[in-house]
Image (tube, one colour):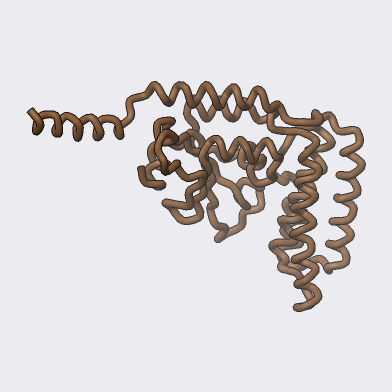
Length: 247
């Protein structure tokens, strides 16, 4: 089965991410699409396993196989967790709805570490731009601030909200370069400190609910294994032809 066919025929959940999901879209903003597909279980019985992710087939589209998606979500990968909480859902089937019902099972205090580590990496790039070019890439600075706000609020409330709400205009001002870099730096520092403080009394559990997620994945794999597999029909047809030729 071709990767594009997995996305086309077996997607269980797809959404819009990026600026449009964050409430930061402006005229000309791209439409970034993310999705989760369920590779049929019989594909895993072959030597060549189905891909863990697929780019395309459309521009700005990226999808993960369900198991890989769950693995990354359990590790509190920021991009994956945010994908689960997009307000712009384009497609969801019964399995996808069950995946969305597990949103809170993926959330844990590990998010503080992963969001902070990702933010530090992005900030180093911005600081390098300032040293070399005298200014950061302002769009990237805006998105880093957005991530820091989301992380702080997740630790404070135990819920992940990715739409920036009333922070839209201040963040867009950063994107336009209307705030001096030292002021943006100070804002980043405040958000990081607030996230650290929130982490000490967060309502989030220490670890995600691995058992609940694994039970879901096993049930889905078993159900998929019972579905008719087009590959089996091809093999049976070939075998049947050989049998006739040998009689």
